[in-house]
Length: 245
Length: 308
Image 1 (cartoon, helix red, strand yellow):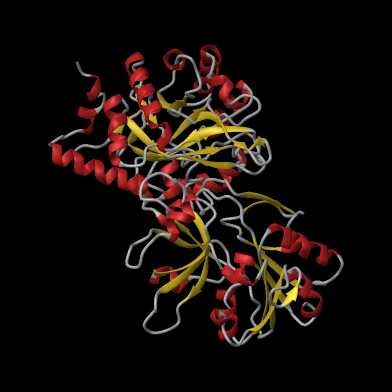
Image 2 (cartoon, chains in turn cyan, brown):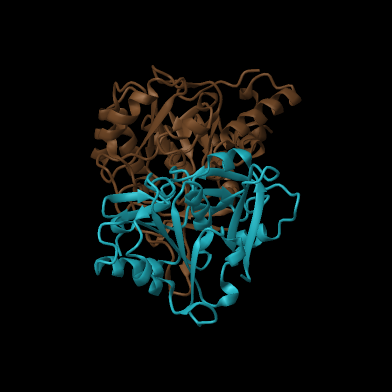
């Protein structure tokens, strides 16, 4: 995934509390420019004895902040706040979970897959990207996951958008979890209107420009069917049916 | 070492803070969640989110634009309204040691008068900060802070309806801030806080449209600090009431600049969004500075840079 970085950090307190879907706010300068922290999903939490307390962040370089972060070297310290927000809600009895990832939207879903498997769920992951080179490496996905791939150019997997895989896989799942670009959520909302998910919980991770990440500044307010919500505090995970498209 | 400051020396109730470091309005919501991550009782005071008579939804997205060392916002005073504040937040504040000051905003002079009346006698409220400087309201708000007559009228209306200490928060978006400061001091303000955000704008060049949902916004953060320090310096020479300095304070040295320019106390704002513990760190650094410099009372530093 050119332009995308995987960063492991030792953060035992955050790692031990973190739930899939939650995020951290990361400082991306030593001074005041860029000023604000950047919200990044928790990508996975280390399970091995030796790496205990480590967590991974997966991010694409989109501006000066993420560019600064991409240049950090092993052994350096970075400043994280978290875990923040409300994560994905997985119902307790073991079920079939369907995860839908668009591009770097895979970030929180690997953690969800890890946790889901550990808790005895069956996990299928629909993974989409523009082309093979932009696809999250399959060997980093837990082997128990039933992985299905789509690329827009057809260089690997099914040709087309990842949402095209849903017709085959949505009916067998009890819960759906998605992270990707807004266009992907719009496609999901269309499918939902056509009855694809009939009454199932479809949870999506929203991304809005954030100030503080803790509900203090009201910068990330989002109009939903149940009123104005803060993405950082009330989200970032929302039920698809509560969102307005 | 004495850090306590009196912000309303001529008010019967007074507004005595244990130390001069407060949080600025709009950066810690109502302080209740903030209290879970920061030891708020260390602070001089908490100033809550700007509050209006009825709840406000605020402006559409995007509400924030980052600028070099600054933050442009058009949140638009989204708030729960005075009823919910009194019923849900004040009872929590009443259990705190740290004083809470309620920031009020309105579209008409009568709104401010009513807000002051509603807050009279509410346990947990130690003072009022009158926001005549919000750039993100279509009517009222900053307009009141741009005319000496209107600023005085709002101040007098609040004073006539409360026994609480009244701080008036000024906008920097004026020709001569000392005129406004004079007017509100004459009208009975117990203290003056400055500055609110500096009006600004960003353009989305891909869409060829204003970037912010509110079209324009208010700039805060380190980028505006020199403007704020200068205005504190100007105003502290022009009025007798205590000045509360605000605008881009991120560390102890910033706070000391404001105090030496003439501020009796300071508010930490945008820095809270980046580091919630910033106000406590500002205070701890101040304690170290006083100790190192052999200063026994913070009052000795107030306006130190103004001495001949």
